[in-house]
Image (cartoon, rainbow, N blue to C red):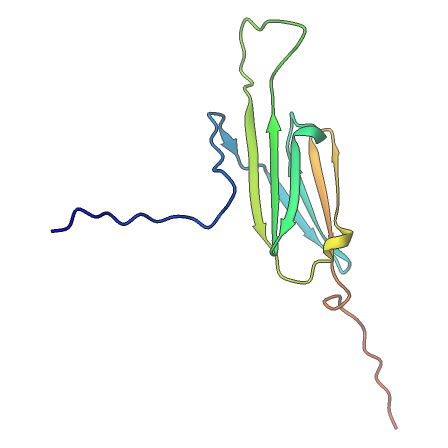
Length: 129
């Protein structure tokens, strides 16, 4: 018998994220029309400084941090704790990456994913002779 053990390594050059904070999947609604796909995610307790939305290799990443910190008072009892949001969606090719927009209003994140011209439906004119 051999005492050697096989060790697998990852190709990622980024360090693994380790945190004691719980990670929650935010509730999400997804809508589609002829012009775009709209993703609406509930991320209460977050601000733009703790929010990371990015699109990479046909995947949409939503990551946010919610904190229950209050600078003015020391809490006697707390039911709301700090936690992180994380959600990843795989999207079909055809999103116009340069035109993606996102806005955060009252804890609701809205992401507009415009379709590229190549996948938008179009009407074809039919002619007769």
